[in-house]
Amino acid sequence: MGDYCEVSKEGRLTLIKINRPEVMNSLHPPGNSELASVFDEFVADPDQWVAIITGEGNKAFCAGNDLKYQASGADMSGQPATGFGGITSRFDNPKPVIAAVNGVAMGGGFEIALACDLIIASEDAVFALPEPRVGLAALAGGIHRLPREIGMKQAMGMLLTGRRVSAVEGKELGFVNEICPQGEVLQCARAWATLILECAPLSVRGSKEAAMQGMNAFSIEEAIKTRYKQIQAMYESSDFIEGPKAFSEKRAPNWQGK
Image (cartoon, rainbow, N blue to C red):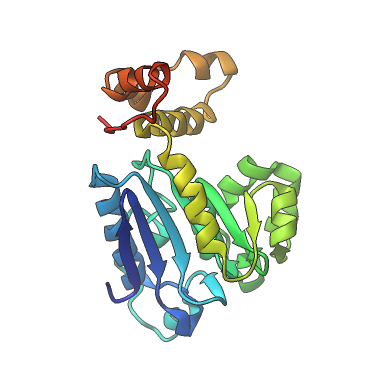
């Protein structure tokens, strides 16, 4: 357990819990640095294949930047290169990360969730990028990720007003994968993680890498013809042989991730 987050491992799954409930799990430079180290370890650990990030308690996933800490005149230097929460500017992670949003996900907190591959939300979750209401802008990726995920006009409806969006509307807009009863969001996120873990890990990573990098292509043809590092690793892995073999033998595959 760190000072600002808790980390536990359940088989191939890493569970990360932001632990600053007294400030709605908002983050300051020391918290961001700690989370950056946690994600560094997750990315580097060959035995960990999926991560879930959530917040302590039922009120907040993460309320964003700790403005009271900043307003106190505290040292705001030392922010990690990998961004807010150690994830919003992290582009070296091919492994799936699931956001289990339990309550408020505001500003940087919503940007953490947008940087994840899936968002599982409690029925009382609330999402917003309210930075313009305090003279700021959602520069931890929110401005760029949200239009890509839900379309420009819908994104502008949030970005230009800073308005709050419910879990139900988030699912309608397309950035929420599933809505769960209050208190069950972590259970739902684990169920999604279990489904991912049933798949070949290198196939999962290759699919994520190709989908994410393909979004930057100028055309479908360019995206399809591009060679992807994780797809090549999939072709060269023992799992590439194990999958068809297990299917033909009518048994569950024994994935090695290499």
